[in-house]
Amino acid sequence: MIKEEIKTSDAKIILKKGEGRTIKAGGLWVFDNEIAQIEGQFENGDIVSVHDFDGYFMGYGFINTKSKIQVRLLSRKKDNKVTVDLLRKRVQNAWNYRKEVIDTSSCRLIFGEADFLPGITIDKFADVLVVESLALGIDKLKEIIIDLCKEVLAGDGIKIRGVYERSDAKVREQEGLPRTKGFIGEPFDTKVEIVENGVHYYVDVENGQKTGFFLDQKNNRAAIRRLCKGKKVLDCFTHTGSFALNAASAGASSVLGVDASELGCEQARENAALNGLENIAKFECADVFDLLPELEKKGELFDVVILDPPAFTKSRASIKKAVTGYREINLRGLKLVKDGGYLATCSCSHFMDPELLEKTIREAARDAHKRLRQIEFRQQAPDHPILWANDASYYLKFYIFQVVDEM
Image (spheres, rainbow, N blue to C red):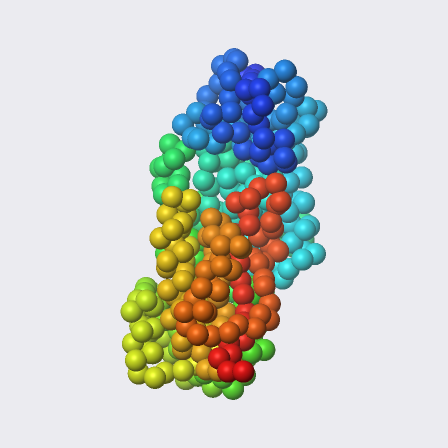
């Protein structure tokens, strides 16, 4: 039975004059340097009210004075207090939206601020939920939200057999929270089989990266399929083989997937066998930055090269170093594409904005003496919605180019 009460404090957050620009623009965050004073008693994680300098009500949210983001809003209306019914509405709206925009057999069910539930993400892999909680206030509401997800899905005849928590990201420490992972509720087999774009995968929700599988590239993986029939394909940073297996199942003549993680490569091989593609898709454990120059020296060329690197930067402070990494990997990748072949390349870093990524790819193409004919510019799948008032919700930029070096 779902708990029916949520602890709310009478404490008030008063903003400095001229501050609160983020929430006034539609965002959900109040930063520590925007607060003039706090009136009343509270515990970190409690629901508090936020008011402008002149007393104007701006919303309800949870507070954490240990964090630079001191308040994250859950509601903007004075008569819309934070209750179980409000959270139920948020979860139901999130599910209704996804049913309209994406295949929901496996999808991101809750995407934090973009679903007005700041600090929590919940992925649905078939009949399993994987939860990542990154903020103190939402951590206290986590089990209520999980129960509401089960309730909402049950309304469509979907029974969730297990929930696993992957709140092991380092960013939790900025909230004064320990990094944690484990079952929420009864244990279950954490090797979950899913189907995406007709390809079967085993998802390791316990030991895989993040929540176990990168659902945000679902539509981008589908987009490269039509380019791969009869082609020789190189998939860099393959993780558990998702782009590689889309290429192979679409009729590629051969696919080489590369990743620095031996665990990832083992899982990719297992996924290839699961689909009967082990003779087409091969996987090599290697540092991509080392392997690509070696392939170039050997005179290797590919019809399609896919670059899906991890985020080279997770802060503005390291953006310069990240640009160097993106330029290098695109330069090396371009040199391995046959004339008339294709390059799919992306960045999953929020701080690598579209303009900077475009500039970096242009520089790489110039240095590689290649010309690029843009086919598509894509973003994350719509179950990871981009909330325009929340810049951090827009992070994945994905290009497909034809590579030409002759006129």
